[in-house]
Length: 163
Image 1: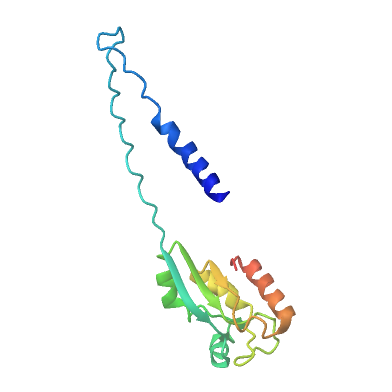
Image 2: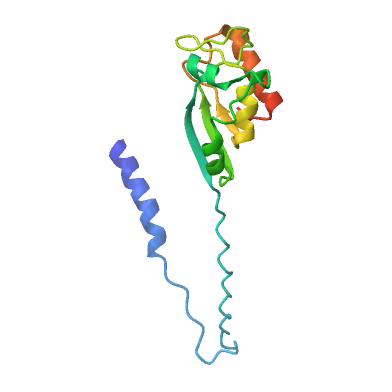
């Protein structure tokens, strides 16, 4: 049965190829000669779009970093001097991102390793330095629990940082 089916299928595929070719019109036919189409004019290549992306690593608030950022004169944390040199480079970027390796859970006591918690000013100073996006999916994102994680996202929204 299989052989018969295979033979029938083969014949069905081969027979149309055995049909006679259509006859060509006589050379003296009344049809005008085919006109050649003009070559299409190629469109110019578009200018490439160039974007300058800068990527930084971990932004962490170890205890000594938080202490260095405290400004008694201003009465607040100020990370601006820490990012001064980076800000010059970030100004050249169209888009800059870093990894925020600390929650911004609101203190009042800011912690370093192993369970981080940084001041809100860090988010604003990252934005002022030129960062546009911070990654928050890392091994410290839940150092201060889910409330700390949610608060971090709220602070980043307020600071104008995508996350």
